[in-house]
Length: 104
Image (cartoon, rainbow, N blue to C red; front, side, top):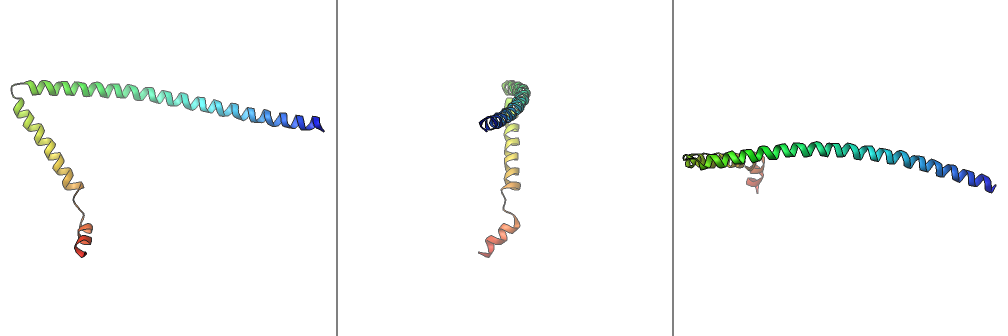
């Protein structure tokens, strides 16, 4: 009787170990996959960073040119236009909100 209980518990323990083994293999595969994705993202971020550095360098060179004042005015105009358009389209209350406000 003790021998049967011991064999049953050993069998249960063996099953649990097998499940843990497969689970650890799955975790290892997932970690390897995620590390690969992180490596790819790192490369893409390096590329984007170098492109941004190049753009900022070109902008600095352009602002140092004799006609920099005109370019500065153009940049200020474009940024202001985007801010105004954003404010107009995304911050203006809708007709329904105005109607609710008028009823009060």
